[in-house]
Image (tube, rainbow, N blue to C red; front, side):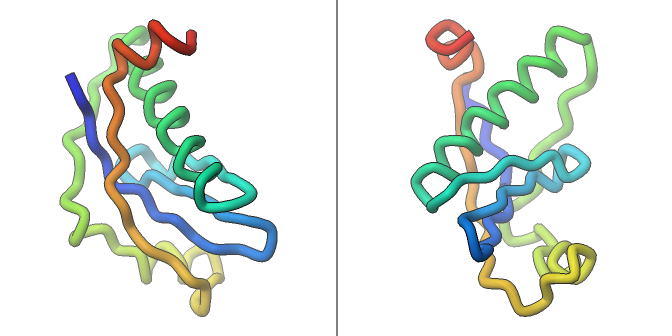
Length: 100
């Protein structure tokens, strides 16, 4: 089953930071956009797998348009940063069979 969650991609001097607001701001990063997207999938798969293995409740994904990116940037004191929200999708079972 494919799971999709919104992620905030924030351009920084040395690459991109990726934050998943639905998971208490779980984050990852990459040196460029391609690596950040790869790491976002890895982060999402790992976190969802961890929740499942621990018997924790998996939150419903937010709607992409409802993610408060300006509030997140303000909280990070990055008000002027280049940022966007993108849905990140992964089939956790398939990913875990291939990577874990």
